[in-house]
Amino acid sequence: MNKGLIGSPSFCPAQHVSFLGGEGSVTSFKYEAETWFYIIEMMPGPEPDFGRVGGETAILLSEADLHAV
Image 1 (cartoon, rainbow, N blue to C red):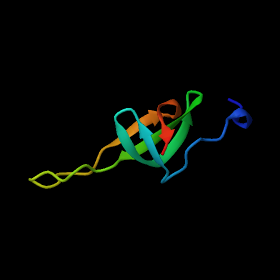
Image 2 (cartoon, helix red, strand yellow):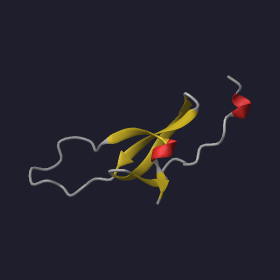
Image 3 (tube, helix red, strand yellow):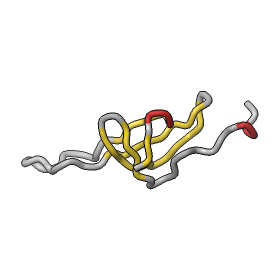
């Protein structure tokens, strides 16, 4: 692979993004299989009556699935 031909990522860490199904912030990204992939930490919803049990959800999405907010 020729790393000189890789384009820059469209989103940066801590940037707020939206996607089908929600919103979140970019925590990290990597280039793989000729596209940029991003780890997105979703925004917490309202706290349930029984409190929070664990951490919030983080998902892996390709650059094509994201939009800047």
